Image 1 (tube, helix red, strand yellow):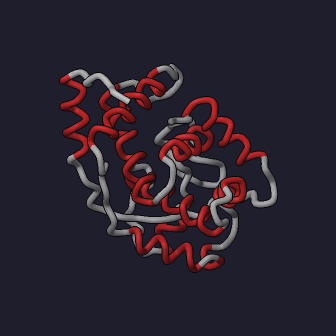
Image 2 (cartoon, helix red, strand yellow):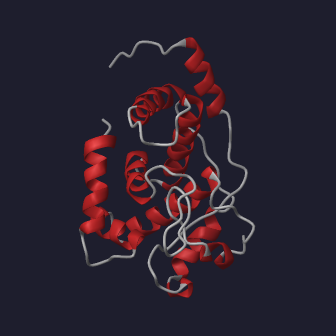
Length: 205
């Protein structure tokens, strides 16, 4: 399908963003109320993700995706990402971290939509932090206690790695993987909410 070239200024902005590379690593979370030592495979996955960093493999496809998704975010007047440049940087990192982990960027957006309503500084009643609501104990588990879970890139690195771990654990079953992420395995309320957001707001073909 042919797509008209993007506005020169926006294209330059996106191109500049695409050259950026995360220099720090991280990994996973449990979102459940289980003890950290309950899942040693998850702890190991966090460690292995610590030094990984990727950017978009195809700049043209990235531009198309970024422009589409940022327009969707811009239409949500209640979110705090008011500045277009910040929206693009946020989306670039979502795409980068989801791609690195091997999961759908759109599903990650749906998780963020439900978990934090795109509030970078969200904190839950049990202490989960940031966009993807990461539990702080994971920093201790992987020996990175100085990591800032309110950092956009750091939070996304943890969350995407965690979500991928649970998706693999459940052999591609998103209902069960999302329930594990939320700590509600055996119930479908949370997975259904995320899938609803994905279908209504973030589906991309």
